[in-house]
Length: 479
Ligand SMILES: Cc1ncc(C[n+]2csc(CCOP(=O)(O)OP(=O)(O)O)c2C)c(N)n1
Ligand code: SF4
Image (cartoon, rainbow, N blue to C red; front, side, top):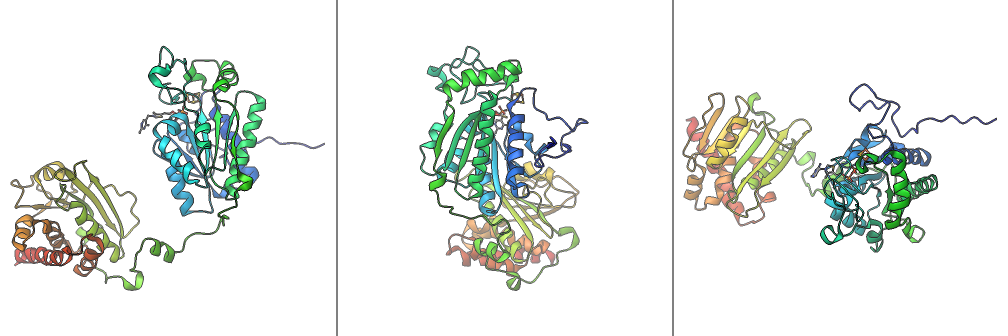
């Protein structure tokens, strides 16, 4: 007699070790929630198709944010609504992987609507699982784009009124009129027959990607007993009897058979270092590296925050520094941050140069602060690490740093730039001063970085002079 042993699919962890607390066996979902059902259906499909070692599941923001507690595959958790964009990046960078997004209706059809629409329109070779429970479950049952007409939620206490809130968005219907998608189906978890249908649709959508035939999406109507204030059995019934009246089940688009596989995924194919360099137009290469620099121990691996008004060249200063760092073989990052104004608003950027991989591009505890105006000095001085450097434009800032445990380097950059004939060169004068004071990158590296970075080539000569001027200024202080 055949014996069937029922066990968890291998695409689930045996014990959910990532989950906080002691109970590592149960999920965090409410009793009767559809997320658990769909997780199981997807995990079984991953196991049966045999793609567990190359699946990357992207969990979005919503009740399913913790999908990575459960799925023993590659996991990425992303910002609200951005799963299709991240999936696009991952799939293009790692074409051999099978990339799936798992998104709720708030995530996909509200904040992320343009993301999903554009990814579908591009026909990205990804698979989207879209859980439509007609509500924002995680945040306490507010109205979603898919909330039914008349349905009561926390934010539609008298029921959704289309004259005020419009009609529920029919995602499958809208996306299926696009040219690119290969497969779009709506199923439900409302009864056993529909659950089986969901099982088939999930497998078909995944296989569509495995065969390289393009974009696939399965919308799954799913119970949310807690958000709907219903018992689990009634919630399931409501899916089967009420939701499906408006959201009709069925295949909305299936052109899988007509689509020639435009990319046959090779699971082992990863871009070579040379290809990455070419893609990034990085012409350096090991052999062309600018000879190394050996900054003093206290200046090594700088985390730099550069701040000033928009228009002072703050971002460019950071870019040239990061580019020069790259030429010296450092791991680098550059993160801009600026207000909405084109000119005159505040701007700052974060630059890290490191011997090791950079974990985060955010510099919250700088070892070097370059302040180009007074508000920046006053705002960021307290963040600087003890024995860090504060270099500020002493021709524009009429106060001095207050702290005694930092190294203070006043540089009258705007004044020196004026003397050179162009105030706009003050940023590179400051960079010259930084290079001379700290030795974190060499002058040679900056000379290469300037023409590679500056958009307007007529500024190159001016900035070469500015670099020299900054170096000269610091040397004059040393004498
Ligand atoms: C940028 C941003 N805006 C809003 C929120 C608040 N928020 C968290 S989950 C959520 C909606 C979740 O609803 P849905 O996608 O339908 O998933 P469910 O919880 O129902 O599974 C919202 C609006 C957030 N976390 N981030
Ligand atoms: S609130 Fe709704 S969607 Fe969220 S876990 Fe509970 S039942 Fe599931």
